[in-house]
Image (cartoon, rainbow over all chains, first blue to last red; front, side):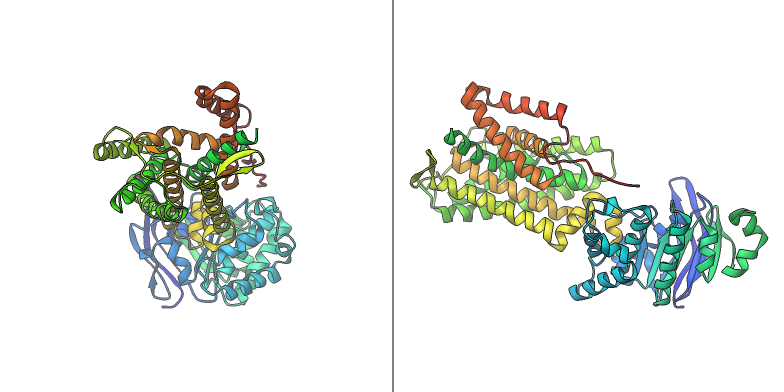
Length: 236
Length: 297
Protein backbone atom coordinates (compact mmCIF):
# COMPACT_ATOMS: atom_id res chain seq x y z
CA UNK A 1 0.00 0.00 0.00
CA UNK A 2 1.48 3.31 -0.98
CA UNK A 3 0.96 6.48 1.02
CA UNK A 4 0.39 6.80 4.73
CA UNK A 5 -1.47 4.06 6.56
CA UNK A 6 -2.36 4.46 10.23
CA UNK A 7 -3.84 1.25 11.55
CA UNK A 8 -5.48 0.70 14.93
CA UNK A 9 -3.23 3.05 16.90
CA UNK A 10 -3.50 3.65 20.65
CA UNK A 11 -1.61 6.38 22.51
CA UNK A 12 -1.60 6.89 26.26
CA UNK A 13 -0.29 9.85 28.22
CA UNK A 14 0.04 8.27 31.63
CA UNK A 15 -3.53 7.27 32.40
CA UNK A 16 -5.06 9.45 29.70
CA UNK A 17 -6.11 7.45 26.68
CA UNK A 18 -5.48 10.03 23.92
CA UNK A 19 -5.97 7.90 20.79
CA UNK A 20 -8.26 4.87 20.69
CA UNK A 21 -7.76 2.48 17.84
CA UNK A 22 -7.31 5.32 15.36
CA UNK A 23 -7.14 4.33 11.69
CA UNK A 24 -6.92 6.41 8.55
CA UNK A 25 -5.11 6.56 5.23
CA UNK A 26 -3.56 9.26 3.08
CA UNK A 27 -2.91 8.27 -0.52
CA UNK A 28 0.09 9.71 -2.35
CA UNK A 29 -0.68 13.07 -3.90
CA UNK A 30 -3.77 13.69 -1.76
CA UNK A 31 -4.63 16.45 0.68
CA UNK A 32 -6.38 14.76 3.57
CA UNK A 33 -7.75 16.75 6.47
CA UNK A 34 -8.29 15.65 10.06
CA UNK A 35 -11.05 17.70 11.65
CA UNK A 36 -11.99 17.85 15.28
CA UNK A 37 -12.32 20.00 18.35
CA UNK A 38 -9.77 20.75 21.04
CA UNK A 39 -8.71 17.57 22.78
CA UNK A 40 -9.96 15.27 20.04
CA UNK A 41 -6.44 13.93 19.51
CA UNK A 42 -5.40 15.79 16.38
CA UNK A 43 -2.09 17.12 17.65
CA UNK A 44 -1.34 13.79 19.33
CA UNK A 45 -1.83 12.16 15.93
CA UNK A 46 0.64 14.58 14.37
CA UNK A 47 3.20 14.08 17.12
CA UNK A 48 2.76 10.36 16.69
CA UNK A 49 3.42 10.56 12.95
CA UNK A 50 6.58 12.62 13.45
CA UNK A 51 7.85 10.31 16.19
CA UNK A 52 7.57 12.73 19.11
CA UNK A 53 5.17 10.35 20.89
CA UNK A 54 5.09 6.59 20.54
CA UNK A 55 2.06 4.37 20.05
CA UNK A 56 1.24 1.72 22.64
CA UNK A 57 -0.52 -0.35 19.97
CA UNK A 58 -1.02 -0.32 16.20
CA UNK A 59 1.16 0.49 13.20
CA UNK A 60 2.05 3.52 11.10
CA UNK A 61 3.59 2.96 7.68
CA UNK A 62 4.63 5.42 4.99
CA UNK A 63 5.11 3.76 1.60
CA UNK A 64 5.86 0.53 3.40
CA UNK A 65 8.34 2.01 5.92
CA UNK A 66 7.40 1.49 9.57
CA UNK A 67 7.51 5.01 11.01
CA UNK A 68 6.83 3.89 14.57
CA UNK A 69 10.27 2.33 14.95
CA UNK A 70 12.29 5.34 13.76
CA UNK A 71 13.78 8.01 16.05
CA UNK A 72 12.01 11.34 15.55
CA UNK A 73 15.07 13.08 14.08
CA UNK A 74 15.41 10.50 11.30
CA UNK A 75 11.89 10.89 9.92
CA UNK A 76 12.81 13.82 7.69
CA UNK A 77 15.22 11.56 5.82
CA UNK A 78 12.16 9.47 4.86
CA UNK A 79 10.42 12.55 3.49
CA UNK A 80 8.05 13.01 6.43
CA UNK A 81 8.15 16.62 7.62
CA UNK A 82 6.01 18.10 10.39
CA UNK A 83 5.01 21.77 10.62
CA UNK A 84 4.03 21.92 14.29
CA UNK A 85 1.14 23.69 15.94
CA UNK A 86 2.07 27.24 16.88
CA UNK A 87 4.63 27.39 14.01
CA UNK A 88 7.62 26.98 16.37
CA UNK A 89 9.98 28.96 14.21
CA UNK A 90 13.41 29.83 15.67
CA UNK A 91 12.52 33.31 16.83
CA UNK A 92 15.93 34.95 17.27
CA UNK A 93 17.36 33.52 14.06
CA UNK A 94 16.88 35.20 10.73
CA UNK A 95 14.30 34.10 8.19
CA UNK A 96 17.13 32.82 6.00
CA UNK A 97 18.70 30.82 8.83
CA UNK A 98 15.32 29.28 9.64
CA UNK A 99 15.00 28.11 6.06
CA UNK A 100 18.55 26.78 6.03
CA UNK A 101 17.77 24.72 9.13
CA UNK A 102 15.03 23.00 7.18
CA UNK A 103 17.80 21.58 5.01
CA UNK A 104 19.86 20.32 7.95
CA UNK A 105 19.66 16.70 6.81
CA UNK A 106 20.05 17.45 3.10
CA UNK A 107 23.63 16.59 2.27
CA UNK A 108 23.75 18.43 -1.05
CA UNK A 109 24.33 22.14 -0.29
CA UNK A 110 23.33 23.26 -3.77
CA UNK A 111 20.01 21.43 -3.41
CA UNK A 112 19.38 23.33 -0.15
CA UNK A 113 20.16 26.60 -1.94
CA UNK A 114 17.76 25.67 -4.71
CA UNK A 115 14.94 24.76 -2.35
CA UNK A 116 15.43 27.93 -0.29
CA UNK A 117 15.11 29.86 -3.54
CA UNK A 118 11.94 27.92 -4.42
CA UNK A 119 10.49 28.78 -1.02
CA UNK A 120 11.26 32.46 -1.69
CA UNK A 121 9.59 32.19 -5.11
CA UNK A 122 6.51 30.64 -3.56
CA UNK A 123 6.41 33.20 -0.73
CA UNK A 124 8.07 36.45 -1.86
CA UNK A 125 7.28 38.07 1.50
CA UNK A 126 9.87 35.81 3.09
CA UNK A 127 12.47 36.97 0.63
CA UNK A 128 11.77 40.61 1.49
CA UNK A 129 12.30 39.78 5.15
CA UNK A 130 15.09 37.25 4.82
CA UNK A 131 17.47 39.15 7.14
CA UNK A 132 14.86 39.85 9.80
CA UNK A 133 14.60 37.77 12.95
CA UNK A 134 11.84 35.18 12.64
CA UNK A 135 10.15 36.37 15.83
CA UNK A 136 9.54 39.83 14.37
CA UNK A 137 7.34 38.50 11.55
CA UNK A 138 3.55 38.69 11.67
CA UNK A 139 1.61 35.53 12.48
CA UNK A 140 0.85 34.81 8.84
CA UNK A 141 4.45 35.34 7.80
CA UNK A 142 5.62 33.07 10.60
CA UNK A 143 3.27 30.38 9.33
CA UNK A 144 4.68 30.82 5.83
CA UNK A 145 8.18 30.60 7.24
CA UNK A 146 7.29 27.38 9.09
CA UNK A 147 5.94 25.90 5.85
CA UNK A 148 8.92 27.17 3.85
CA UNK A 149 11.33 25.68 6.38
CA UNK A 150 9.59 22.32 6.00
CA UNK A 151 9.71 22.54 2.20
CA UNK A 152 13.50 22.95 2.26
CA UNK A 153 13.67 19.52 3.89
CA UNK A 154 12.14 18.11 0.68
CA UNK A 155 8.92 16.58 2.05
CA UNK A 156 6.99 13.89 0.26
CA UNK A 157 4.50 13.85 3.15
CA UNK A 158 3.86 17.23 4.76
CA UNK A 159 2.14 17.20 8.15
CA UNK A 160 0.49 20.54 8.90
CA UNK A 161 -0.88 21.14 12.38
CA UNK A 162 -3.40 24.00 12.62
CA UNK A 163 -1.77 26.30 10.07
CA UNK A 164 -4.74 28.70 10.26
CA UNK A 165 -4.58 29.18 14.02
CA UNK A 166 -4.77 32.81 15.07
CA UNK A 167 -4.70 34.17 11.53
CA UNK A 168 -7.08 36.67 9.93
CA UNK A 169 -9.45 35.14 7.34
CA UNK A 170 -7.66 36.77 4.42
CA UNK A 171 -4.32 35.36 5.59
CA UNK A 172 -5.87 31.93 6.16
CA UNK A 173 -6.93 32.00 2.53
CA UNK A 174 -3.37 32.84 1.41
CA UNK A 175 -1.87 30.07 3.55
CA UNK A 176 -4.37 27.54 2.22
CA UNK A 177 -3.54 28.58 -1.35
CA UNK A 178 0.14 27.98 -0.64
CA UNK A 179 -0.67 24.53 0.75
CA UNK A 180 -2.75 23.67 -2.36
CA UNK A 181 0.13 24.88 -4.54
CA UNK A 182 2.63 22.71 -2.67
CA UNK A 183 0.30 19.74 -3.13
CA UNK A 184 -0.02 20.38 -6.86
CA UNK A 185 3.75 20.20 -7.11
CA UNK A 186 3.50 16.62 -5.88
CA UNK A 187 3.65 16.68 -2.08
CA UNK A 188 1.16 14.60 -0.11
CA UNK A 189 -0.45 16.68 2.64
CA UNK A 190 -2.07 15.76 5.94
CA UNK A 191 -3.82 18.85 7.26
CA UNK A 192 -5.06 19.02 10.83
CA UNK A 193 -7.53 21.85 11.36
CA UNK A 194 -10.15 23.26 13.65
CA UNK A 195 -11.09 25.63 10.86
CA UNK A 196 -13.08 23.01 8.99
CA UNK A 197 -14.40 25.45 6.41
CA UNK A 198 -10.93 26.45 5.23
CA UNK A 199 -9.60 22.90 5.34
CA UNK A 200 -12.49 21.35 3.41
CA UNK A 201 -12.05 23.92 0.67
CA UNK A 202 -8.64 22.50 -0.34
CA UNK A 203 -8.77 18.90 0.97
CA UNK A 204 -9.68 15.94 -1.22
CA UNK A 205 -10.86 13.80 1.66
CA UNK A 206 -11.37 14.31 5.36
CA UNK A 207 -11.78 12.44 8.63
CA UNK A 208 -13.62 13.72 11.67
CA UNK A 209 -11.84 12.74 14.89
CA UNK A 210 -13.63 12.70 18.25
CA UNK A 211 -12.12 11.55 21.56
CA UNK A 212 -9.26 9.80 19.81
CA UNK A 213 -10.96 7.89 17.03
CA UNK A 214 -12.51 8.50 13.61
CA UNK A 215 -16.26 9.04 13.69
CA UNK A 216 -16.85 10.18 10.14
CA UNK A 217 -14.95 10.15 6.86
CA UNK A 218 -15.41 10.79 3.19
CA UNK A 219 -14.65 13.12 0.29
CA UNK A 220 -14.28 16.72 1.42
CA UNK A 221 -17.17 17.96 -0.71
CA UNK A 222 -19.54 15.40 0.81
CA UNK A 223 -18.46 16.15 4.37
CA UNK A 224 -18.91 19.86 3.79
CA UNK A 225 -22.62 19.15 3.13
CA UNK A 226 -23.08 16.52 5.81
CA UNK A 227 -25.51 17.92 8.39
CA UNK A 228 -23.51 16.47 11.29
CA UNK A 229 -20.36 18.28 10.14
CA UNK A 230 -22.23 21.45 9.35
CA UNK A 231 -23.76 21.51 12.81
CA UNK A 232 -20.65 20.61 14.78
CA UNK A 233 -17.83 22.26 12.83
CA UNK A 234 -19.06 24.65 10.20
CA UNK A 235 -21.65 26.54 12.21
CA UNK A 236 -25.17 27.22 11.11
CA UNK B 1 47.79 51.55 34.90
CA UNK B 2 48.51 49.66 31.69
CA UNK B 3 50.05 46.89 33.83
CA UNK B 4 46.77 46.56 35.72
CA UNK B 5 44.80 46.41 32.48
CA UNK B 6 47.12 43.83 30.96
CA UNK B 7 47.02 41.58 34.04
CA UNK B 8 43.26 41.90 34.05
CA UNK B 9 42.98 40.91 30.41
CA UNK B 10 45.30 37.96 30.95
CA UNK B 11 43.36 36.51 33.88
CA UNK B 12 40.16 37.51 32.11
CA UNK B 13 40.99 35.37 29.11
CA UNK B 14 41.09 32.29 31.42
CA UNK B 15 37.78 33.28 32.89
CA UNK B 16 36.36 33.78 29.42
CA UNK B 17 37.43 30.29 28.28
CA UNK B 18 35.75 28.70 31.28
CA UNK B 19 32.71 30.98 31.16
CA UNK B 20 32.15 29.92 27.54
CA UNK B 21 31.54 26.31 28.56
CA UNK B 22 29.27 27.41 31.40
CA UNK B 23 27.31 29.67 29.12
CA UNK B 24 27.02 27.26 26.18
CA UNK B 25 25.71 24.47 28.38
CA UNK B 26 23.28 26.84 30.06
CA UNK B 27 22.18 28.14 26.69
CA UNK B 28 21.41 24.74 25.28
CA UNK B 29 19.92 22.79 28.22
CA UNK B 30 19.39 25.54 30.84
CA UNK B 31 21.65 23.76 33.29
CA UNK B 32 24.16 25.49 35.57
CA UNK B 33 26.89 22.90 35.31
CA UNK B 34 28.60 23.30 38.68
CA UNK B 35 31.04 20.55 37.77
CA UNK B 36 32.47 22.75 35.03
CA UNK B 37 35.16 24.31 37.23
CA UNK B 38 36.31 20.83 38.17
CA UNK B 39 36.72 19.91 34.53
CA UNK B 40 39.16 22.83 34.40
CA UNK B 41 40.97 21.34 37.41
CA UNK B 42 41.11 17.94 35.65
CA UNK B 43 42.57 19.66 32.60
CA UNK B 44 45.38 21.03 34.76
CA UNK B 45 46.01 17.55 36.20
CA UNK B 46 46.02 15.95 32.76
CA UNK B 47 48.73 18.38 31.75
CA UNK B 48 50.59 17.59 34.96
CA UNK B 49 50.46 13.81 34.41
CA UNK B 50 51.39 14.09 30.75
CA UNK B 51 54.43 16.20 31.47
CA UNK B 52 55.71 14.17 34.41
CA UNK B 53 55.36 10.91 32.47
CA UNK B 54 57.23 12.33 29.50
CA UNK B 55 60.66 13.40 30.67
CA UNK B 56 59.78 14.58 34.13
CA UNK B 57 60.30 18.10 35.33
CA UNK B 58 61.11 20.71 32.81
CA UNK B 59 62.37 23.95 34.20
CA UNK B 60 61.27 26.01 31.28
CA UNK B 61 58.95 24.89 28.54
CA UNK B 62 58.80 26.35 25.13
CA UNK B 63 55.56 27.61 23.72
CA UNK B 64 55.12 24.65 21.28
CA UNK B 65 55.30 22.05 24.10
CA UNK B 66 52.78 24.06 26.03
CA UNK B 67 50.42 24.12 23.06
CA UNK B 68 50.80 20.38 22.61
CA UNK B 69 50.03 19.93 26.28
CA UNK B 70 46.94 22.07 25.92
CA UNK B 71 45.74 19.91 23.02
CA UNK B 72 46.14 16.69 25.01
CA UNK B 73 44.24 18.18 27.94
CA UNK B 74 41.51 19.46 25.64
CA UNK B 75 40.85 16.05 24.13
CA UNK B 76 40.79 14.37 27.52
CA UNK B 77 38.52 16.89 29.22
CA UNK B 78 36.29 17.07 26.14
CA UNK B 79 35.64 13.34 26.34
CA UNK B 80 35.21 13.63 30.10
CA UNK B 81 32.55 16.28 29.56
CA UNK B 82 30.69 14.03 27.10
CA UNK B 83 30.85 11.21 29.66
CA UNK B 84 29.54 13.43 32.46
CA UNK B 85 26.60 14.53 30.35
CA UNK B 86 25.82 10.96 29.31
CA UNK B 87 25.98 9.48 32.81
CA UNK B 88 24.77 12.28 35.06
CA UNK B 89 22.66 14.75 33.10
CA UNK B 90 20.99 12.99 30.17
CA UNK B 91 18.99 10.53 32.29
CA UNK B 92 17.55 13.55 34.12
CA UNK B 93 16.77 15.59 31.02
CA UNK B 94 13.02 15.59 31.70
CA UNK B 95 13.29 15.79 35.50
CA UNK B 96 12.72 19.01 37.43
CA UNK B 97 15.64 21.39 37.03
CA UNK B 98 16.51 21.28 40.71
CA UNK B 99 17.29 17.56 40.43
CA UNK B 100 19.83 18.16 37.68
CA UNK B 101 21.34 21.09 39.57
CA UNK B 102 21.92 18.93 42.65
CA UNK B 103 23.39 16.22 40.41
CA UNK B 104 25.80 18.82 39.03
CA UNK B 105 26.92 19.72 42.55
CA UNK B 106 27.35 16.01 43.27
CA UNK B 107 29.38 15.58 40.09
CA UNK B 108 31.57 18.46 41.19
CA UNK B 109 32.37 16.77 44.51
CA UNK B 110 32.88 13.44 42.74
CA UNK B 111 35.55 14.90 40.49
CA UNK B 112 37.22 16.87 43.28
CA UNK B 113 37.50 14.00 45.71
CA UNK B 114 38.40 11.43 43.06
CA UNK B 115 41.40 13.60 42.21
CA UNK B 116 42.16 14.02 45.91
CA UNK B 117 42.17 10.22 46.32
CA UNK B 118 44.56 9.78 43.42
CA UNK B 119 46.93 12.70 43.84
CA UNK B 120 46.53 13.53 47.51
CA UNK B 121 45.35 16.72 49.14
CA UNK B 122 48.53 18.77 48.95
CA UNK B 123 49.20 21.14 46.06
CA UNK B 124 51.43 19.91 43.24
CA UNK B 125 54.13 22.05 41.73
CA UNK B 126 53.42 22.38 38.05
CA UNK B 127 56.34 20.91 36.12
CA UNK B 128 56.29 23.62 33.52
CA UNK B 129 56.72 27.31 34.12
CA UNK B 130 56.25 30.10 31.72
CA UNK B 131 59.60 31.45 30.78
CA UNK B 132 61.22 33.34 28.02
CA UNK B 133 61.85 37.00 27.68
CA UNK B 134 59.55 39.77 28.58
CA UNK B 135 58.83 42.85 26.67
CA UNK B 136 57.52 46.30 27.22
CA UNK B 137 54.00 46.98 26.02
CA UNK B 138 52.59 50.48 26.60
CA UNK B 139 54.66 50.70 29.73
CA UNK B 140 53.60 47.32 31.08
CA UNK B 141 55.91 44.36 31.49
CA UNK B 142 54.58 41.23 29.85
CA UNK B 143 56.26 37.91 29.16
CA UNK B 144 56.16 36.45 25.68
CA UNK B 145 54.62 33.27 27.10
CA UNK B 146 51.82 35.32 28.61
CA UNK B 147 51.21 36.86 25.22
CA UNK B 148 51.27 33.42 23.59
CA UNK B 149 48.68 32.09 26.04
CA UNK B 150 46.43 35.07 25.45
CA UNK B 151 46.86 34.43 21.74
CA UNK B 152 45.82 30.80 22.14
CA UNK B 153 42.78 31.82 24.17
CA UNK B 154 41.80 34.42 21.60
CA UNK B 155 42.27 31.94 18.75
CA UNK B 156 40.08 29.34 20.46
CA UNK B 157 37.37 31.94 20.93
CA UNK B 158 37.51 33.11 17.31
CA UNK B 159 37.27 29.52 16.06
CA UNK B 160 34.35 28.88 18.38
CA UNK B 161 32.50 32.02 17.30
CA UNK B 162 32.93 31.03 13.67
CA UNK B 163 31.74 27.49 14.35
CA UNK B 164 28.63 28.57 16.21
CA UNK B 165 27.63 31.41 13.90
CA UNK B 166 28.61 30.26 10.45
CA UNK B 167 28.44 26.49 10.23
CA UNK B 168 25.54 24.09 9.85
CA UNK B 169 26.31 22.40 13.16
CA UNK B 170 26.54 25.75 14.93
CA UNK B 171 23.17 26.68 13.53
CA UNK B 172 21.79 23.42 14.91
CA UNK B 173 23.17 24.32 18.36
CA UNK B 174 21.48 27.69 18.33
CA UNK B 175 18.25 26.07 17.13
CA UNK B 176 18.24 23.59 20.01
CA UNK B 177 18.82 26.40 22.49
CA UNK B 178 15.66 28.05 21.16
CA UNK B 179 13.39 25.02 20.70
CA UNK B 180 14.66 21.44 21.05
CA UNK B 181 11.43 19.86 19.85
CA UNK B 182 11.20 21.94 16.68
CA UNK B 183 14.89 21.13 16.10
CA UNK B 184 14.10 17.43 16.24
CA UNK B 185 11.48 18.00 13.56
CA UNK B 186 14.21 19.53 11.38
CA UNK B 187 16.08 16.24 11.67
CA UNK B 188 18.60 17.42 14.25
CA UNK B 189 19.81 14.73 16.63
CA UNK B 190 19.38 16.77 19.81
CA UNK B 191 21.33 14.43 22.09
CA UNK B 192 24.21 14.32 19.65
CA UNK B 193 24.45 18.08 19.47
CA UNK B 194 24.23 18.44 23.26
CA UNK B 195 27.08 15.95 23.62
CA UNK B 196 29.11 18.05 21.20
CA UNK B 197 28.44 21.19 23.23
CA UNK B 198 29.73 19.41 26.33
CA UNK B 199 32.83 18.32 24.42
CA UNK B 200 33.63 21.83 23.25
CA UNK B 201 32.87 23.53 26.56
CA UNK B 202 34.87 21.01 28.56
CA UNK B 203 37.79 21.13 26.13
CA UNK B 204 37.98 24.91 26.53
CA UNK B 205 37.98 24.51 30.31
CA UNK B 206 40.74 21.90 30.01
CA UNK B 207 42.83 24.31 27.96
CA UNK B 208 42.35 26.99 30.60
CA UNK B 209 43.41 24.47 33.26
CA UNK B 210 46.79 23.86 31.64
CA UNK B 211 47.30 27.58 31.12
CA UNK B 212 46.49 28.30 34.76
CA UNK B 213 48.82 25.55 35.95
CA UNK B 214 51.66 26.95 33.91
CA UNK B 215 50.92 30.51 34.99
CA UNK B 216 50.35 30.05 38.74
CA UNK B 217 52.82 27.17 39.07
CA UNK B 218 50.83 25.02 41.45
CA UNK B 219 47.63 22.99 41.21
CA UNK B 220 45.38 21.22 43.69
CA UNK B 221 42.11 19.31 43.68
CA UNK B 222 40.04 22.28 44.83
CA UNK B 223 41.40 24.80 42.32
CA UNK B 224 38.26 24.46 40.19
CA UNK B 225 35.86 25.47 42.93
CA UNK B 226 36.44 29.22 43.14
CA UNK B 227 37.23 29.56 39.45
CA UNK B 228 34.00 27.76 38.62
CA UNK B 229 32.09 30.34 40.63
CA UNK B 230 34.03 33.12 38.94
CA UNK B 231 33.33 31.74 35.49
CA UNK B 232 29.69 31.64 36.49
CA UNK B 233 30.01 35.27 37.59
CA UNK B 234 31.62 36.13 34.26
CA UNK B 235 28.85 34.35 32.36
CA UNK B 236 26.19 36.25 34.30
CA UNK B 237 27.94 39.60 33.85
CA UNK B 238 28.11 39.00 30.12
CA UNK B 239 24.59 37.59 29.81
CA UNK B 240 24.38 33.85 30.39
CA UNK B 241 23.68 31.78 27.29
CA UNK B 242 25.31 34.39 25.06
CA UNK B 243 28.62 33.46 23.47
CA UNK B 244 30.06 36.94 23.12
CA UNK B 245 28.63 37.72 26.53
CA UNK B 246 30.77 35.00 28.10
CA UNK B 247 33.90 36.35 26.40
CA UNK B 248 33.11 39.92 27.35
CA UNK B 249 32.08 38.92 30.86
CA UNK B 250 35.33 37.00 31.37
CA UNK B 251 37.48 39.93 30.30
CA UNK B 252 35.33 42.36 32.32
CA UNK B 253 35.66 40.24 35.43
CA UNK B 254 39.41 39.97 34.92
CA UNK B 255 39.68 43.74 34.67
CA UNK B 256 37.39 44.30 37.66
CA UNK B 257 39.52 42.00 39.77
CA UNK B 258 42.69 43.57 38.60
CA UNK B 259 41.50 47.06 39.48
CA UNK B 260 39.90 45.80 42.69
CA UNK B 261 43.24 44.33 43.80
CA UNK B 262 45.09 47.49 42.88
CA UNK B 263 42.74 49.85 44.66
CA UNK B 264 41.62 47.80 47.67
CA UNK B 265 44.44 45.28 48.03
CA UNK B 266 44.69 41.70 46.82
CA UNK B 267 42.83 40.24 49.80
CA UNK B 268 39.70 42.12 48.73
CA UNK B 269 39.80 40.76 45.19
CA UNK B 270 37.16 38.04 45.55
CA UNK B 271 34.94 40.25 47.69
CA UNK B 272 35.04 42.79 44.93
CA UNK B 273 34.25 40.37 42.10
CA UNK B 274 31.34 38.69 43.89
CA UNK B 275 29.98 42.07 44.94
CA UNK B 276 29.96 42.88 41.24
CA UNK B 277 27.95 39.70 40.62
CA UNK B 278 25.35 40.79 43.17
CA UNK B 279 25.16 44.24 41.59
CA UNK B 280 24.63 42.75 38.16
CA UNK B 281 21.99 40.34 39.39
CA UNK B 282 20.07 43.18 41.04
CA UNK B 283 20.35 45.83 38.35
CA UNK B 284 20.96 44.04 35.06
CA UNK B 285 20.10 40.35 35.53
CA UNK B 286 20.24 39.75 31.78
CA UNK B 287 23.90 40.80 31.75
CA UNK B 288 25.77 43.06 29.38
CA UNK B 289 24.69 41.32 26.17
CA UNK B 290 21.74 39.22 27.28
CA UNK B 291 19.17 41.47 25.64
CA UNK B 292 15.54 40.59 25.94
CA UNK B 293 14.10 38.92 22.88
CA UNK B 294 11.51 40.85 20.96
CA UNK B 295 8.82 38.42 19.94
CA UNK B 296 5.45 38.78 18.36
CA UNK B 297 2.88 36.11 18.84
